[in-house]
Length: 159
Image (cartoon, rainbow, N blue to C red):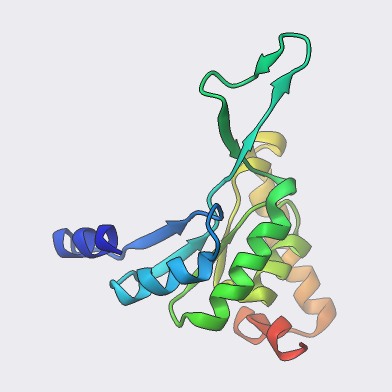
């Protein structure tokens, strides 16, 4: 929260806090960011992970651990967005494992206002942006959603 406050005091543009999933509660971090003046939160950054080479008998990464991203972290990202939506009123950007329009729809339904695509770009190329948006539009039309606001947080109304 002190970082958000310091940045907010130093600049006149919106400040978004990108949150780690490597804590007991990302939602608590989101509340602290909101209370400190963040304009939005981004859920989530990479998940702390490790790989070991059995042949070399040592960690694959030079400093031992690194960040896991992509499809493997989607359930973690969805949970963090879902829990944050219940506790915060600022916009939430959903991140982690978004490769399709359905992936994006799930994040919006969990409570995200927007979504970020990262690993899919490195794996599939920049055309993934257009594919995800097109598939999301098709999903919304098929399911009868007029806009993203109608879809946002709907998973909370069904539990």
